[in-house]
Image (cartoon, rainbow, N blue to C red; front, side):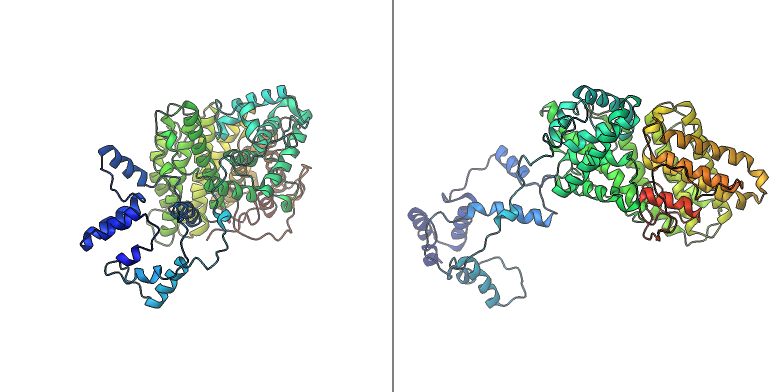
Length: 607
């Protein structure tokens, strides 16, 4: 061993130190010290502070790629650089096999021949064998990656609107849309800040806000078209930033539906936004958010990352449930400690709702799993689904919506509270209708519970849209879809429950007709806007007219600039981002509208 050490890239003093060493244990200590602490071969005197630093440095941080195979390879590639020999040595292959001749080495109990191991060691030690390096592949990402900014992308530079108009739209966004969207920070996301970081986010804030502003009709359409162009450009170019995730998120929530299903890209952009967020590590707790010594800006940036992940996760979870992939809730250190996340000193007012949504989504995932398990069992209680669901959701409801029960709802003029109420009631209805779709036992009781929940959703929608009015028109697309679905479900279930003639449906038809009118108004105000609510409202009205025999069947829909097809032969999993899949045998024309908006195969059932 001492003879072989003379061939190693060490200094003369180091060789002499080894030659003067007696005893195997002492020799190993010298070698280990050299490997751990460099060429001096000296052991530093341990100190308390040094030990603590060493301990904490060795702990995996949220950004370390321990569970990311490719990132771990990249990390190993960087760590290997300091091991490059500092002296020119003759090429040799003898160093490898000699390692296996040592009397003491760590045995891994490998079921491999000695020849195989020697061959592997020779590949490492034989520097005559060329290596076609792919180091660039594992190069860490640039500290300052390219951004989607520039005069050819900026809507102001392109002359789509003035800076003054942009500042005005930003103010409107944070007053009207932010209480529901909740992904931005009003203090951080100023016009200058957003404009300097992402044309996609900047444009979609302007474009979506202009759709709801009566004074912005002159440039609303061109902003929307520019936003659609940027969405395609950013996806094709592969830009990645937290602002890209935010831009896609805002563009998806209240977007105008594509002219045809073949042009719909919402699912593509959802997947890309989630992938970018994951790659950027937004799902991890930001260290800056836990250190009081960090600057206010650093803490704001940290919460900006966390908030973005939580909101895009909510959208992705709803989408996954819609496709029939309602898997276990993907927990992370951030979501596991979400209960008090909204109490941070720099929290935005919408962060409380974000916490409530995350906790509700977690309960829904558990409830979905339990319903799957219980559906095949016999239950003495005919209302077992309703009671089970309320027992799981009631603790959440009491905490976050004390004015709401399964039997009565106290309307709220607060937009955020109203939106949270809709999400709760709509998901409760979805769970009931899911059970109705999977169970034939106690079906009449399940139908009663579904009908009651559907009527409750419709009644609250009419009340709020009449009393709150236009401030509520910026609800998200899934909320409008669920209101329309509740109306269609109530219409479907009424005859089976009451076994009455058409003349007995007067009160229900009056309610549903009012739902249709309110939807149409919500989606077409201001006059330059074509929202999904108006599409659903017009179609619901045509379904109701067909029901009473006016000759205006479901195929006769007021011209909305959209194209529907009842012969499209669409197949796949269900795709309503909030509703999920409920094969209720609803009017096929109405189902086509949902497929147009939420993707192929809406309403074809869940596994």
